[in-house]
Length: 293
Image 1 (tube, rainbow, N blue to C red):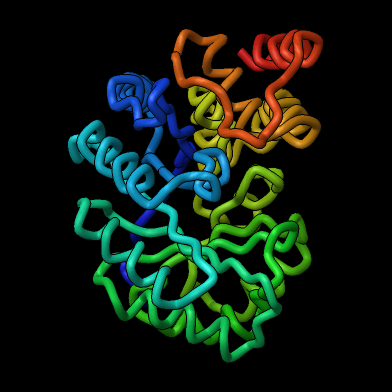
Image 2 (cartoon, rainbow, N blue to C red):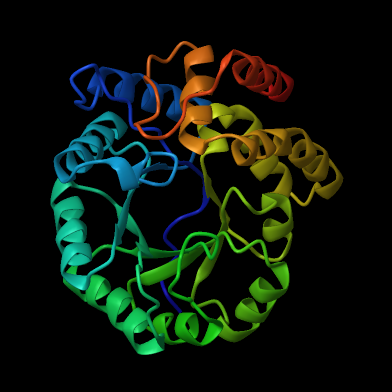
């Protein structure tokens, strides 16, 4: 059986940029310090919340380096890798490894559909290029490449592919997967899931943007789950779900950055052409954030 690597709540961080479009390391440090003080189990950079699709290569590595420096080895740091080519994915993975991350969350982009063999080759190539533990990320809402149960079952045999972050919202599929992989991959929930349900099925935690805005409440939910206090967990989950609803209603990055601005973090606005929230939408979001506190 593989060595257990990651557990708990990993907030996906926004990428704060200054007026020159450089990563604002001071804000990264403040946000990471506060999240660690709140009790999060790890930090994750370059996800959807972090606007990875809108960042340059230099901005990406600057963000990763800032998070690694801010964490000071207090909690593990994961970095996102996503590309349309194997060569680019390997380049990103090696750069993140050099920057000192503790693991990678790897997704596959696809302009044209990729078949079973192509998907397996992509993740296998990244896994063999680094010595880091790897979390596979699947999100059928945005990916053209299908990470079928057969693909994931094959990839689970690789030693350093240790977990799956699943945003399919399909709990039946997760149950089928859990029955196939027999503990070879740990399962993490994503924002589009209900984490309490995934934890009840045997999940190990979640990696999601809302935990960046509501870390204390996310930790309380995780603690209730691992203690088997399911009625309490469901109550907490229902309270937090309004954040997910807001993020689905409006632009994700714009929501996350606005919510953090409410809390005093000068993270800036979402990268254009993503649309910012108008005054009415900001008031709506503010009421949701206050409800979750």
